[in-house]
Amino acid sequence: MNVIFIDFSETYYSNVVKKAVPDVLNGKFVQIRNSTTEYLVFAPKEYASYHADIVERFCSKEGLTGSYDRDRKRFEVYDPGWVVAGGGKFETDKNEKRLRLYDNSMAYGRFDSEGLIEKIRSIKELAGYTVQIE
Image (spheres, helix red, strand yellow):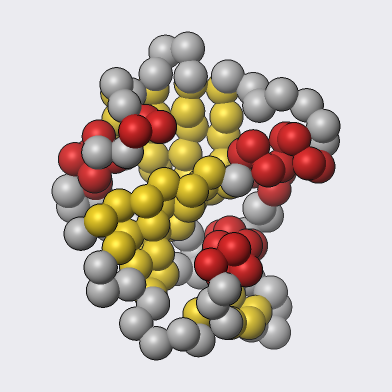
């Protein structure tokens, strides 16, 4: 399965707060899949109060349809063949080349860790990173 990494950190820091992306980041992430591709979608905690916010931004970027539930805590993808496999939290340190994945999403459940380290190693933006999954 093809793996694509999307990180909304640059969008948030450049367009919203007008600052450089810090070397150490904390935030949330989701795994979104279709039949051929898995997307790992990251966002700083300040840019996504809920995992649903990340899913909504992903859908907007990819031209997919969906909507929030009544409480705006879950965003459902309507396009057939797409599924949110789970989510969690992340911490990255660019200087130490370290990525830590942990916790889970209240809306979508825990991320699927099976084969995840190998998938992350195939992502050029994260090449050489030590990956810790808790």
